[in-house]
Image 1 (cartoon, rainbow over the protein chains, first blue to last red):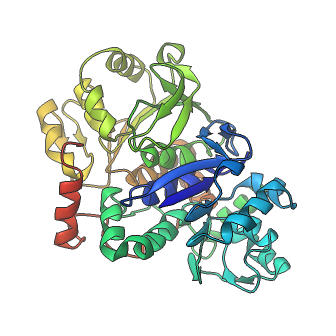
Image 2: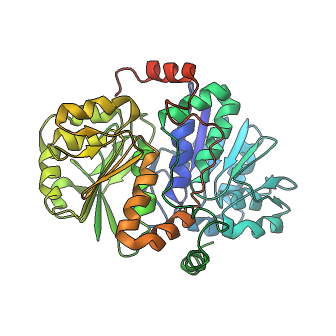
Length: 210
Length: 210
């Protein structure tokens, strides 16, 4: 089973590596990082680069496609090579997955029309512009589409997908291997639970990036 | 504030990228990926490469050092260049952090002697061989050492460190930015909660790797 993970400049690293760490550990999977140009692709903060081993043209029929988000998503919203590739491979994927604002790229490519989906908490309203039904859940499964909310939600979304690919036992084994027994020291992971001043501070920090 | 994140062949990617995603988002931080040789460093599964921009010699006084784990840790347990570098920079770090079996490398370098620490759940007993006190907690803070348990625990450990570096508000802002409101679909993230058959399966899978 081939899993293609898409990289583009300005991705958020955890959007990519969270799902990678889960899905790459399933038996019988081969993960390939793809980008428009092979080679180093740098993240949103400019200090981390992952290597894309293949260009889009070289990966024509992956079983699973994963696309993440990040401020670089803004430059991937116009139709072009990435959208064409996503539409083409989505014809034959068993599952298509996104994390964070990656769902906006799928939506802009016309892939999620009429489906339920989620995205980064600050971008949820934008899904409706593409005929997608915004859903305020951490992981949304609609047909073969597994859509995670922001950044770290990619781990939960990937475990959900893992259970479809390898059964509950298989997903649980990966969860134990990555010791995913989360114990965040604060309860600030959503706008509903973070202190209001922190929410306002983050909105200011991310203005123009989402 | 300079944060040096160590890469060596065979690291587990989420050990690295979890803490990165938290710490690199703190105001005033500069993250540098370091390795014995600069360039691409490939992970335990062989399908992901991160770029190390600096060799160890080029980073002589980071404020924070982070070292992760993974099967490649087994090749980093003998004294040599990495241990020498860790001992040298640890003299002047404000904080030294590890994730997973990264703590065994710190311990083998003589850095954690007499301190409380944790590591990957399957390796906890090994800490005592180096005069370290094994502690079955997800995040252990002892003096300037912030030690996380396996793989995904690096996110929780980094948020704990973030609160020391940038205050609770600063850590909570990062938690919200990465939407870290974990909702794993299963409760299999520790040997205490995973089904016994899954625990046995994982022990078989990881035999010889920890």
